[in-house]
Image (cartoon, rainbow, N blue to C red):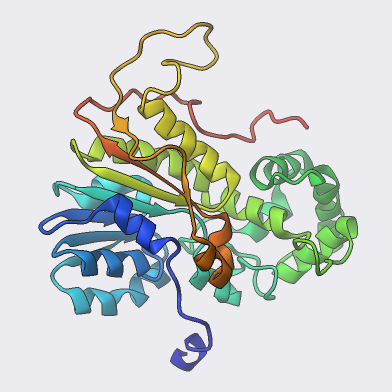
Length: 332
């Protein structure tokens, strides 16, 4: 098994210098790496200062693989299995100085064909980060056509979602869709074969199903609110996203918490004076990867880093539809 793992290139954490600069780890601090993965950010944070890291991952495989890093940095590293949205419970009574989140599927998960995340490798149609619960195969073989279409349209931003959903329904009538290549074949009934100069036609549908199966956008919204409650004055929140849906949520969260949006529900007319900003923004907008990094690491090309520094103001109230996305009632 070890020999097989070595055939993959080493995991390279995206925008590492920018993440460390925004997080600013210091001696004696305690930091949360909410998306441990292969441990790239965690290792760098521990190397940047004489600090502690509480690393979180809901993937049991990542927890097992990370035990060697725990031993290497003992007692400064604690690795805990769970959702990063549950960080308040997972960190316990620790006073946290900073939180970093790298949103999306890890390269390790993509590399393992048996996890079913990639359309480039044939394997079981799974996509579950926690390796439990409803799988992508369960979804494509049981959900109604309209629900599938909405998932693909909202989470995948796929303009041909209706036709793809119909194709999936027709394919599963012939036989259950249980593998990644089986799903690709159903999608290609609509899109045709991939062209070398275009993104693979299954990309958006796979993204949508992964987000749906893992509840990724809901978890991100929950995690942002949890970080706001958890961080004291001066605490830093750093978030790296790779897709427009995730970035839209993070952008709106920081804009709202920095007082850049009208207070209250966006469905109510007129702006009212809201609570004091709970975050200040260390830079305007987002940071992107350097040209050099983007050339070396294609994954970095779409990366966006946003950050905030906690103020003394209390956490703002949570508004249910404030920054989230839903497929319920979607029509397109």
